[in-house]
Image 1 (spheres, helix red, strand yellow):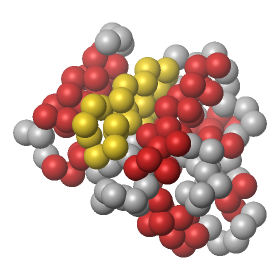
Image 2: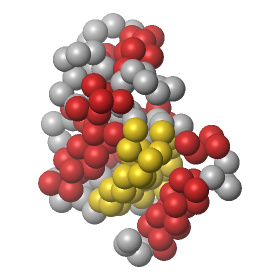
Image 3: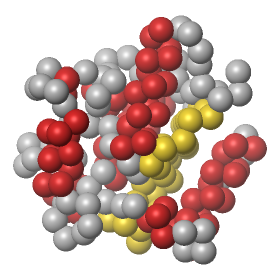
Length: 166
């Protein structure tokens, strides 16, 4: 009854997918989910509908090419890529989801899909907060607690967990 899921990047994908699956199976429901620069889509080629894949997909640590390689390794087949538990953004129904905090990075190929997923959740009637961390790169959480972007993120996370909005 008081479960909070939290994950970054692929972990954010797993949290979003688990929340959809929890709703669908009706076995339990997380109260909250915190998705930190989540991967929510299934295509990082030039066909991606997200501008951030093109803008931020080549000159940073996480590239669009690497993301497409990860997707191809993760999927057993092309059918998997069309499963909403694989790519939550493509789910037809994103209603009845836990309260959600989404943190994205300014310079990240995943930025736009994370924010778009948050907007879809909002449109479906869910409580969602979305914050873009200015000047941040994908993976910044690994830099440690003293890093400015991590401290900013913890401020958002702590306020979200207290039920306060920023």
